[in-house]
Length: 163
Ligand SMILES: [Zn+2]
Image 1: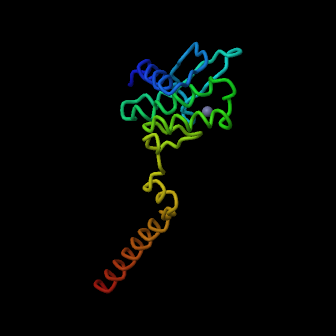
Image 2 (image 1 turned 135 degrees about the vertical axis):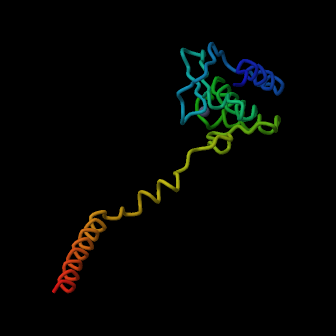
């Protein structure tokens, strides 16, 4: 697990270094349940925000940069007139990407881009589902017929021998 506090500090100082001042954030929290969302920025009341980051991004196998991209994305939403992904937010995201080229702030980011493996359908279970199960009854009937044939054959053989 990454040091969330440390990442926040680094993001704040990086934004400051290029002259971007974010809004008031009263709470930074980690979301352990979010699967489809990397981060969320919620306005609790006028000009006061809460930022929520998916625990998936704070795993050790994810790059710090990928986690910070999302933290920065949410931080930009706290700036006046930046609730959406257009206009001022987009301008600021482009400014960060240009002046701090280690970051790539995007509107949406796929799992693959974050370095998270998504579960793909197991080919073994797929073939199992598509191939039709062989009827067992046919094989069972064959055995019964073979058994009867042998009995009849034996009777015939005995009749031939003892007649
Ligand atoms: Zn956003």
